[in-house]
Length: 155
Image (tube, rainbow, N blue to C red; front, side, top):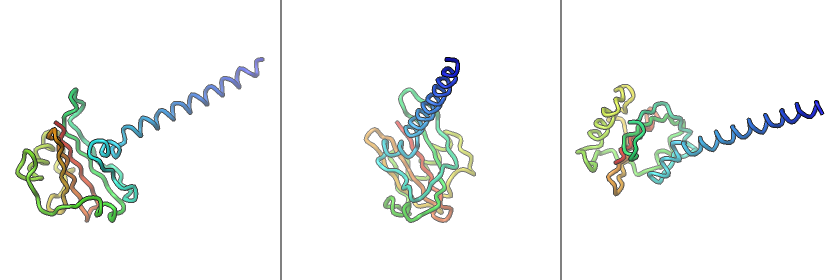
């Protein structure tokens, strides 16, 4: 009888560790930024690009879900990124700003992103999308550095 208790204890520990690992995996899949992009904007980073996040900052949690989100990714492969959007080289107006750069500078100033973490706008291609509620996303693609910069403004 005494030998059964340690075996049961060990099995209980193994099951507990497996359960914790499984819950961590589920939580991570729900909070993965690529999944969030898909839910909010209908696209994800191509897995073939092998993008990894190198910087992130946001305006913090908000009761209404509004705020600014900024992410920088380094990508190992560029072909799938080049084909992801109809990239623009010319800036256009956004819903509330005269240009993409004006919008992004305002948003990044608001969340106090250092200049060293911002894109070199002159080296980037642009993609812009807005939603009916006025929320906007601007993606910058620096082909030379293989960096993607996403800036989202939620209203």
